[in-house]
Image: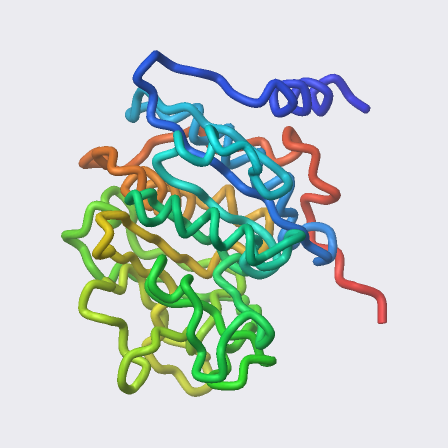
Length: 294
């Protein structure tokens, strides 16, 4: 192991860095994944995200923790202002004892804790939902990616060489500081929002859209936010698929803005500023995408 990787693992193992007694606490929960190297890279992506949150240049007094299993420490769950999920489908449903996990998470949501789901962590399987598609995640973040096994709806996953992502709510705090960008990634389409005609509920705001697919384009919602009746906030974004996409400054700022907003911190007028990450510093299996052998 090279010294840089060892150093990255060392600060991850240390767990937390407290930036003041009144620090706002953010929890990153990394779920399981079986995607090929260079794609989801959820463990490395979680560590990269933790580092970016610690290194925000214009947001102070934030403490970031990361776990790779369900957080069973009640004091930890009760202390965080928002929880960020990364993994292959919604991690509480993939960890052992999903009923307990969802009950724990419901208590967090009931007290107004924020929630963020990235890419496939927005996803639910048919076994997770009722026949009509109900699941608490629909209310917690305002929508979800409906896997093809779902009985009520089917969202679509397709990699695009060039997907143009455009702001849909310029006045929203999450939209600060980033502009339209084009990316090689897998923004999910036909996401499920549960309302008539699959329209988002009145308390859900579409934050980014893309005209997809290129051969039959329609305006698809690829990121959204919700202000819940319990006082909490949720944010869902169906990227990044590729680990390399974390180096896109606009996408990274967009995601960090969303996390800061769900934690009920002020999003700076210029958006959250961070350094471009060194992808190799977080011990990925691979920086480059390696397709599965067939």
